[in-house]
Length: 222
Image (tube, rainbow, N blue to C red; front, side, top):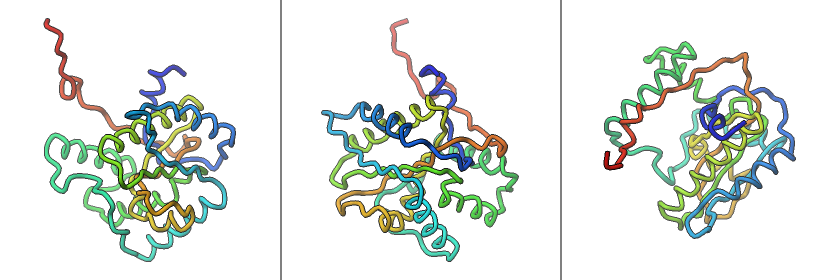
């Protein structure tokens, strides 16, 4: 798989089989991802690769909290601006329409939407997950570095025939994750990432992208 195919075939998959991901595959992907660029090469990511019983325990703890209606943990960062302006608000709305429409969930059916969202805590059935932390003393450029790293991981997973779904939602139950992983106090959980082999039978929709002229300005003197 060349890099163009990896980029264009990557998407957020939300239904996986329980087929295990070999440890050697994990090590190969994460060893290569370590070459992702970062400002002054400080490599500000702290990644936990979790499978087996520890992942099952994280799923259990988060799932029980969701079922009990426990409130989310206090946010350590905002996922989106409080007032998301156009065109970003329209793109987010279009994503929701595609996401829940593929599940046959009506826009006004908030209970069905809530049930679909709780699949986050089961990692959408994936047998493996990453939990990516960043030191709380880091600034915006280092958060960008972490994003570059995570994209590198996702593309390498595609090269291995795997799919993934990055989940900022895990920051909402960060304390349940920490109870199992015991990260140092100085770290913030940025996101989780479920990954594995896609459950083809489950289907799934793919969101579109904005036209190039909406996001790119060519300055070439022509």
